Image 1 (cartoon, rainbow, N blue to C red):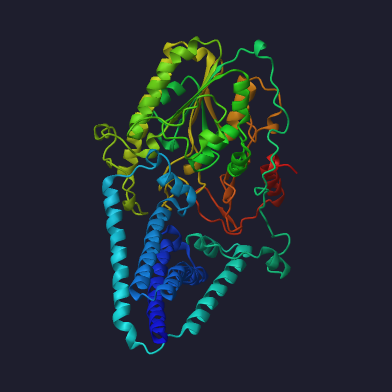
Image 2: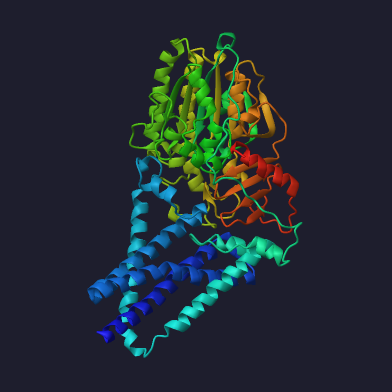
Amino acid sequence: MRNDTKLFLKRSFLYFLLATTLLAIQFFFYLWRSPQADSMDFGGWLFYLGAVFSHAAMWMILPWLLAIAVWRVSRCSKLSHGLHLLLSSFLHMLAFVNGEVYLIYKFHINGFILSMVFGEDAGDIFTFDTWLYVKVGALLLAILIGNIVLQWVVKRQFNRLNRVHYLPVFLIWLAITLSSQLYHAYAAVVQKPSVIRAGMHLPYYFPLTANRLMLNLGVVSPEEFITVETNVESAAMNYPHEPIEAVSTDSLQRKNLVLIVIDSWNYRTYSQLYTPSIYQFAQTNRVYTDHLSSNNGTRAGIFGLFFSMPPLYWRDCEILGLQPVMIEEMLRQNYQIRIYPSANIVNPPFAKVMFSKVPYARNRTEGKTAYDRDCRITSDFIQAIDTLAQDENPFFSFLFYDLPHAFQLPKEKLNHFKPSWEFADYMKLNNELDPTPFYNLYRNCVYETDSLVGCVLQKLKEKELLDNTVVMITGDHGQEFNENHQNYWGHGGNYSPIQLRVPLIVHYPGDEAGVSHYRTTHYDFVPTVMKRILGVTTPMESYSRGQLLNDSTPRPWHVVGDYMDYAFILDDYTILEKRPSGTIEICDSLLRPIPGYKINTKQLDNAIRSINQFYKE
């Protein structure tokens, strides 16, 4: 029995080493395939190699320990080795899928993404072509076969090895782990980009930071030491700071409001060629050319638009059940609120966080495809206008189009811009790919969305509602097609202008038409509505981080992101990003690191304090 145990441990340990090596190779290519590989130095590669092997071992040790536990209980070699094989194969598959996701979007698979892929109405959010499933399935099958071959090789060859030296292997792994972690702690405080950025490529790798220790040891001086901390762990909020007060509705000629948001709207596609209906509408209204979202993703982008505060507060607002003060005030003033979402708003939980108090708020729209649902919300709104316009109370309608995000058009509508992909083949995306066919697919989607928005605008015009209706057209965030040549595709991957900047067109009855080139942000939507439409007299800073859209006062420190990863966007588009590890990464608008950048610590401190303005002291 003792010999059987030794043989089992020996064989399973050898498979563990081979499986760890295979996973480490996958992790290595996370960085090797990225544009950052060209800027890596010797120290960066040395750190990454150590991190790769130590992190891979951490992943693969769990299947090995579980296999040992099963052996201890069952004494069944086939069952234990089979479990080891399946669990290791699953982790290899997960690493492969995560690598493909990270290559495109530059973030790792997390619970939020999984809930949107597999959760309620997931098909409304992510749509993939059948052929893409086939290709991914074939690759995953190849990984499984590779692991079977590995275990077969171990079974055939392990008897040739007289001894397995567990202790030396453990000591080597421990030395590699400690050295890579300590090196990262040093690199974090001296801001060595090759090391800091390299560690971000590994999934759920949390390298050591010891800034205070490094400060005490004299690695950096107190003047050079910078920390970025917020009160995001607190759920004690002070929102709004004081009760909302408004002028009497009897003395206020209240206006209707129509907010049209296009998911994943690349600002380069706002033009007479790609969005002719919106472009024509804009010629007699106000266009803001430097408008930034509150984040590079839908959840936080919409949150910032409706709450007028950084998405860092999402979790606290959800826990405490706080609603946007704008929605609260509209309900108090008896606005007819209608929500028209193409994709469902249950996951992410916009229905809960933004509209839980709205009577009969619509959570989803019927339709097999995003195009069907976009058409449906358009026709539903057009039909509702006749009833809404007859009511003595004003209305607020929110239309949220999804087609440019879904890339889901009927083939007969792919003819406006050629050559065009028929579906988004994410497996083809890399830094050398000509983006034109993919971008043309996107432009075709934007073009069709524009035609639907044109129907909405035409209906408002026919009903003579534009004289008493404010119309705002924007996007929740941008959409990248490798414009920065850093192998970023889509959104959620960085805080460059291409993923944050969106068009903004505003029709306000009586306002002068024109183009405003100063910076505006999603945070400016709420105070503009509250002051100019709802007649709110409460100071804006009590409930908002924004300014009026027609206020050209500079917005030099725009904060974006969530509580784990957020950034400050300076007026020259310098990006100061606080990573989950606690480090600060500084780059320009093209995502190129800025070595030796001197942060104005006083201004940064003021900006950080402003983030906390809605937390109780």
